[in-house]
Length: 114
Length: 111
Image (cartoon, rainbow over all chains, first blue to last red; front, side):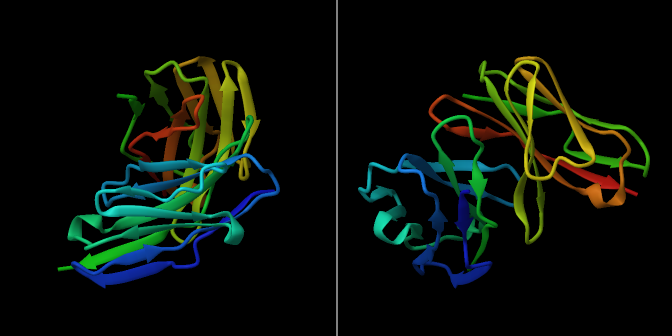
């Protein structure tokens, strides 16, 4: 069975600080995809990134970066120079190939204080 | 852009009522999902469907049923609403490459 753990329930940072959200996953499958979603106060989940298990390259998109390490089964998300608009709940998720649904972590609530 | 719409953003129902939550997607996706989201519990899968007329139970199907008569529409049914079904309900559909798109959510209160 698959499992995603986001150990940080809530994080609070001051604007312009860097912050890393941790995600640890468990699966016995060798082919899988990892995701990050953002849920702002409006409630709608916004897709941020998808990474497949064969691509361990780190990815950077503006102030966002993701570090995928199969050796530690982690897919961590870093926001550089955080802004108040980054305040949201962030979910990490996992899917293995085939007709199986996404497995979500319980989310990390990030509060960025001005 | 993919669009997933849900029939209501907020809904208040009484205990024992039959409740229908509708979800429609406009991108011809085969796969559709219903989740509920509760504080501290994250998103939990209720039901999913990989094809019209086909449905599979998720992690917490008790007290719910679903209907998928047309590809674009996936309905969640609470046969007899109870207070413990007060929650945020999220519908999603996804592409063959597993990009999952969510609707805006329905916040259901059962009194």
